[in-house]
Image 1 (cartoon, helix red, strand yellow):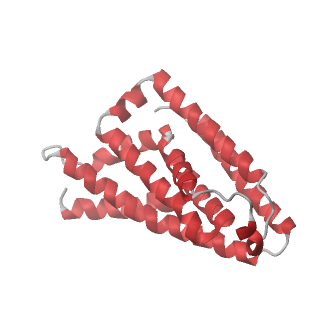
Image 2 (image 1 turned 180 degrees about the horizontal axis):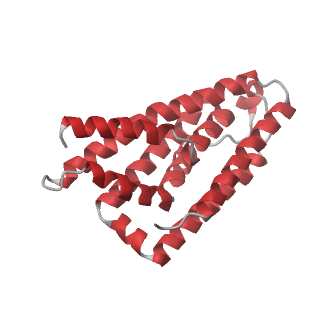
Length: 208
């Protein structure tokens, strides 16, 4: 991949990362619930999920998933179910002010947040199909593909680390302004509803 091609992909990757989606909602929800320091582990999981998607596409499995109705449907509905579960969990989250958060009986572990973030991006056939449509535009088929996929995966990981950090800290800052359980309950339900809406959108997604 030459420099001009990489610069074009670098610009595109910022647009991909910034665009609202399940990852952005997950990052903001994590910042809302856990603050930045712990919540950022969700972002690390999201990035691992993106790298997983790039590996899937790079190994040719993405094309198989996109071509197989059964494989596509299984992964799609797994993604829908997972987003619905996240939405319900957030909707029912306790309305605990940040000042009292450290006293919560069982805060989510860093490993759990990492796994949740990975699931959001890894179990998402829309992401696979998107990468199948976008990535080939930046590949030089006359050159070895493995180094190019490495560059693409690294670039996407970098932009997502930066953008999702911004989403996480934004939600964490908002949380610090919330003083009453009623305010936090409203915000929890807003994010829960966003997850449900994303699940509904994924349910309508079809292969091109």
